[in-house]
Image: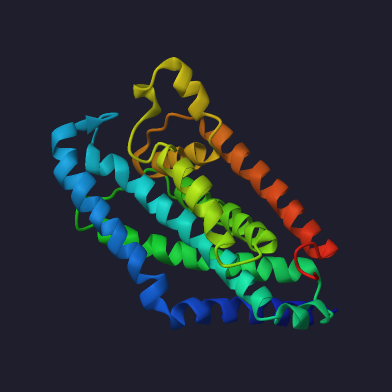
Length: 257
């Protein structure tokens, strides 16, 4: 395929994905916005006033970056897993398999769609947070790059989940039993410096901790984790998940059967 044909195939998938979640925005964009607003009210205003400061910042200011990142993670993941599994379920995947479009283009198209939804929801949550706190950005480059790369990581994770899923119940197993616990234990609501030394070490196994802290550093300028280590963790995650996703797509595992 020529470069122009590849671009047309890629942009077609991306536009289709964006139109899909925009068409059902009351299901894709509105619920996470309402959920995060409730987090701001309950944890930020009500509980936060009793907790006081965290790492030198008001508790509301401290948790806002984590809540924004949580919305980006869950929505970039859920967009790809639901969309690609629906493609399998409806047997429309056969049309892509017989097309001359390279598999890496298909993968990038679906991942980009997931990233766009994750960033869209993150932007909405950010706007909502302005009603609760005076959000300041410490480092624009780190903030933008870490949120973009994190969305890529979990869009790839959603793709792998969709490939192995055999029913609609299967696409909720990983978010419920893996993604949600890791997110809540990823330093969204607390600093790991409050934990005993042993549990601080255990927490550092959690990749979401690195992403949340890097994003918090971009906004507030504080982090429990080295920023270089955070970006290294994200880069390694992308490399591994992209390789696995492309291998699954090339082999047809979970797709052609």
